[in-house]
Length: 321
Ligand code: SF4
Ligand code: MG
Image: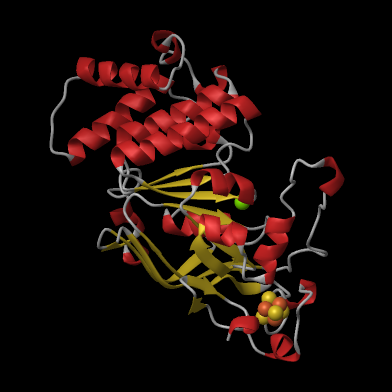
């Protein structure tokens, strides 16, 4: 097992006091597995990514265990984390510019990434070889004219180019776990498909585990082996991607799946889930989805269901207990 998350809770300190934004997260990710994390915005997907990468804002607090390859990142001090950032876990943000330093040339940053990996592997490599390695990766990513690209600053590149530079960085770092937060949402459709293929290639060639965060369940279907459906900071369902799409068990997953456009003009049944996700400051009692659920029962309003194993899946819903 590459990643083991145990009883993870995350809190933010706000003007209204400590607020729990992730609750009771338990999650295992195998080496080489691609896990899609889906849910509407505000469901806690990005917070989960930030918690695992240990890049929560200063008002955030972690409780529980985040074990990557035997090291419990949740228990490390900030000063000890430097060694693991980028190489154990690397996060790609929705805006890829956030993964790059705006005042350093692209080539310099990529050479640094390659250097970090060689250091980790205990190898000494000279500058010329590092630059050649960087150029080779850019060629593999089909970036035209790598020689001129490495001389530019991030803001001098297009959105699609910057995203490929960040992927190049992950290819050079070879992290054990890659977290990608809506990495293609700022890209146009043709580049989106290319970038998805790059992630698949990275996963296949280096056996990198990937957490792919997206609000788009059909995109998760294209890339992921398994999906986690999140709502109100909780895992609501966890299963193999084909199975969840064919037969979603949780009423929230059912809503997400039925809101996928079918392409059939007469059958555009969007949106399927009435209402909005709750605020973390005013979570409903019982099942956090109950105010929006068409199958709500009395017990749902009183008691929160546990995430239980059922038919090779995990689901948090009283319909299955
Ligand atoms: Fe709906 Fe009840 Fe299941 Fe919650 S526990 S999803 S309210 S049926
Ligand atoms: Mg987000």
